[in-house]
Image 1 (cartoon, helix red, strand yellow):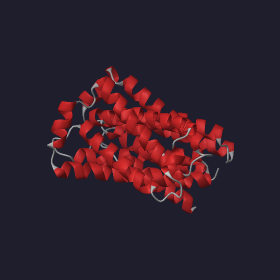
Image 2 (cartoon, one colour):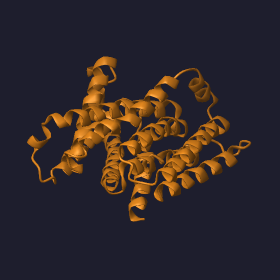
Image 3 (cartoon, helix red, strand yellow):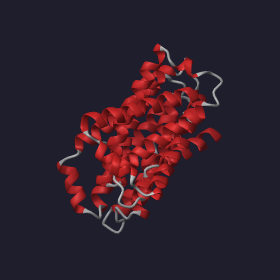
Image 4 (tube, helix red, strand yellow):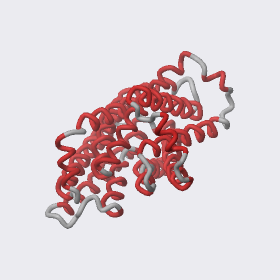
Length: 302
């Protein structure tokens, strides 16, 4: 059960790493993400330094697909942060990470079916139902009607593609499992992620030279807060990979992505994005928590 307790901790990390964005002051979300990108890559190099292999071992044709996975992860994660900045935690995490659970969990399970299939798939179905309830909760309890209307009119494609990119990236990244150790794979993921951010910046002007000038003039406090988010994510992700190598990456990916439960709690209890005083909202919230925990129990015993 120790492994599953650690995976639950990773889900808390994944549900909380973007929270520091809300604590920055007069700080654009792309500046936050630049800090996150740089610090996470530096920490990946630090972890890789404990690997017994040399950097030359990473320069092989086997690196291409895992790096492509990192690029896809960057695309999805950028859409996630953009959605959080616009719609809040209570909608963005359930929509994007929930979709990623469906896609990624099934793909990883097909690739490495190390567990009881009926329990795993039943747990996945329960989590999907929890995500549906969570989305319903957002509509019931949203304290910002303009955000709810904006979501109904636009932004849906961003949520769909965010879920798709985050859901399929492990399929590419997993091609390196038989070739590289965890430290190497983690570094490859973050190198691919950096390339993905660079690609988006070039083709969409997500980060321009004028942005960089403003970024460099930002307060150290904002950089420190953003770096904390990166450290939280790195801790959760690296730990998820280590435990996934023991229990199967299909299980570790799905349990880690119970993150919407914790992100919704941030949104409800701290940021007050949702009001549980509205009719049926409290019932929907409790049902969501029960379904998430039930799904976790099913998967943990699969």
